Image 1 (cartoon, rainbow, N blue to C red):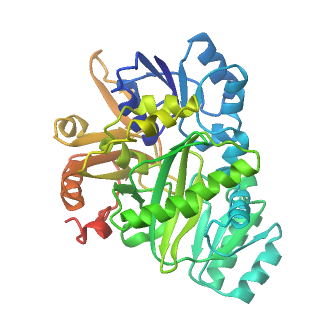
Image 2 (cartoon, rainbow, N blue to C red):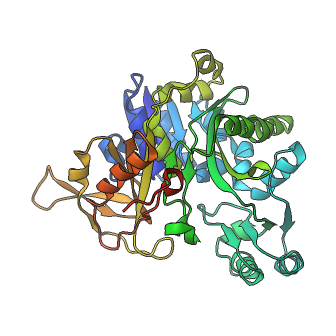
Image 3 (cartoon, rainbow, N blue to C red):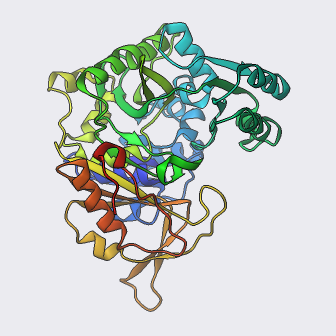
Length: 437
């Protein structure tokens, strides 16, 4: 089969890495891709948001399945456009993608259909939001309604921080039109977990649990990022907890959408807080998580392409009948190596060293995110990789325990270098009970 993957990050590289292992795969294209993805797929110079261009390419190249990685094209209606031409696509349509594209839509759906979540209030006026914050107090969470590349959620420790967040989002337009409306909600306490499922709107097949690390610095300090690393499985998500999350959060959300006349087909991500009162939904994403995918996919033993085709064809029942998905019993930890200055301003074009040495390591794989490939002057067969984004690499390691996976992955990270490189040194430490040295 001829596959097109849309996107250019570490998540897309991980999906391509796994799809390439399928016996059904003939050729993979990626639009626009990145330097590392070019090792396993033909990169096509079409932006992920260029839906007409992607549609034309898919028709011309007779693509059998298109897999959408990032949220932007989903919000833009790429699934609707492809479905109109009878082209198979993995990802929800525009109405279903509202679950991520609008936090207000998601919260109101949760409230209507009994999905446990934080108490919240919606505002389209900054002054009214600030008055509400003054009356309610802090800590609280301020969220931009629209998409903000994972950075539109601000956890405010005090009233001044919360009011500053409102100013930044609504008045200074830190996230553009995404901040025209905001949510102010209670700050839930507990441990976070990420639950991703595959669904064709009729059946639901869960992937392994995972946990993301959003803050830029060790100890969950500093501003939010798109994610600085993840591990799988999340020990806090016991069998009973997993079942409760599926029943009270995932199933209710999908059933709620169905009752609204919306059929959800694709990957559905639930960000969950494990509180004393039980699991509560923090947010939904309409696609695979990034960097959670980089920590989940290496543990996935089943044919991912077959499962995606079943979702696209609304035939996920056959996967259920076959016993569901199979998983490696080992743990996996993925550490993001980011550019200096990220999540703020950063420089590009820094040469990356150590990748060849890491490629020789057992139980380690490096997923490229913000990289580009450059030919070595005078050597046609030699290439070098340069940084081209904020999150540059997702270095990923497997181990019999999370502690063992941590040891493996940080041995690999220490072999990699580029000017300004920064990374967290405590990815997975909560789960292992120990900090890596």
